[in-house]
Amino acid sequence: MSILRLDHLNKRFGGLVAVDRVSFSMEEGSVVGLIGPNGAGKTTVFNLITGNYQPDGGDVFFQGQSIRAKPTHQIVALGIARTFQTIRLFQNMTVLENVLAGCHCRMRTGLFGSLFHTLGQRLEEQQALRQSMDALAFVGLESSADQLAKNLSYGNQRLLEIARALATQPRLLILDEPAGGMNEQETQELIGLIAKMGQQGLSILLIEHDMKLVMMACDYLVVIEYGRKIAEGTPVEIQTNPKVIEAYLGADNDDGI
Amino acid sequence: MKNANWLGYIVFFALLAATPLLLDRYWVDVLNSVGLYLILALSLNIILGYAGMFHMGHAAFYAIGAYTTAIINTRYGIPVLWALPASGIAASLFALIVARPIIHLRGDYLLIVTIGMVEIVRIALINDVFGMTGGANGIFGISRPEIFGFRITQPIHFFYLIWFFAALTVLLFSLLENSRFGRALKYLKEDEVAAEGSGIHTARYKLAAFVLGAGWAGMCGTLFATKMTIISPESFNFWESVQLFMIVILGGSGSIPGVILGAFLVMGLPELFRDFANARLLIFGLALMVMMIVRPQGLLPARPRKYNLDSIRELS
Image 1 (tube, rainbow over the protein chains, first blue to last red):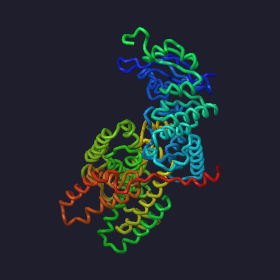
Image 2: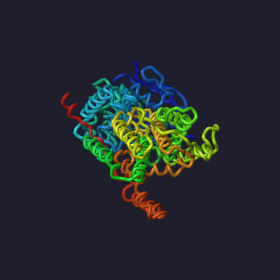
Image 3: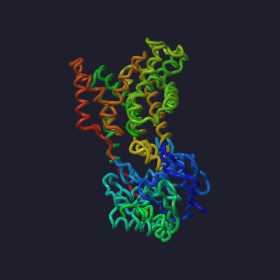
Image 4: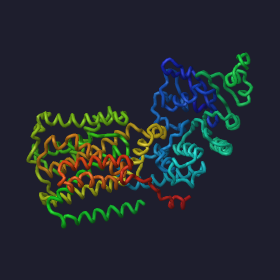
């Protein structure tokens, strides 16, 4: 069964059609890359899936259920977690507290428990701390738990965003340019991390400009240009697809080339 | 750090409990005002300090609590301390109704709306809304509280009542700060989009912060009404809201030790400089301006929390 299916998704900003009837579906446990030139509408597709934007038309199905009219926090609770293209961490809080934010939606303590620190609250808090440390260990930031998020290097901030997303216990992880600002070695480690998450059965949808990462990490690619899907297929198929080459490099008959 | 904080609070409240022995009636009464404003500022700190919502109309909730107590005490003869929960609930309900349509506003926009709210409440009270608030004269003859047959009348009695409530507030709100609820508020102050994207129902938590802060201010209104025995709309003007706002920002928003220091400075210092008469406000204003330039995070800003990870590391 497909974990995520987009059905003729549409989004306009004024006169601009940012996403134009995009449809694709991804299999449970697969790593899918969404690629395309700058301004093609990739991040807009992500924002439509996660409820940050409301689509003007079409629908999004997660595990067979329509999530189109749902608010973001409910979509997270259903099992879709994301990272942001421009890093959005809680900069003045510790690394550990950032990850604890992800645990929030799996916790139940209400106002009463929070005010009086009931037994249930303390047990739940211990469990959340343990899960957060596990998520930090998974991305390799365990030793930075007490540091402020803003003091981490750029690459580590990206990893922290992944750890926070993992703490929500997602079924589908959406990564928006996870290698942005990373050096060669960090990118290599990220590819390993993505493979490790894939092996654990997590489905991953990612946007990335680093073609080496895309070709190595993804099982399947979807290409969009000017908001329209122009191709989809395995990395090998996409590399040889004339339409994709045209979109990235321009057509042969372009003047000046 | 956490233990050091608790130890600090215990020493502080123990020392404070002894001060009435050394002070005259006037200064005990000043400390009573500091205590009341401390409780109010701590409740505002939930909204302004943790959740980061610029709310400058906190006196409205305080007024609703005070008037609820005054009305049910003078009209129906219900003892004032029994009116305490009712006042809290009345202020919370009011917050639920008025905050719902405005919580999505950001920064200065929210600030302006909340200023409007506190003015509307004050003017409604002057206009004797529902024929129950006594207009500009207010309500008088509110009875004194009674605990197990002991009537609280003297400033020194009120001192212990108010500061007991203040200590309780410090205790509960410290616990709240270090919990799922408190963290959720801090996340939405830091980055609302990221908080929502991490699975936090931001709209609900903003509303909850308002309802909780308002309820606490409402209960504080009960203490004020029974201490004064007379209340009028002028006790809840815009200036009160500004002072509360100042206590939180000056002390350190989101920091309970900061709010305690802020309450003493904002409410206590003008009393110390009474001799300067009107010039004291000038000095005070200048001090605030200098503060905001050299130390905008407040005198005792909130420090990041350290979690005790030893127990977790042992288990894994």
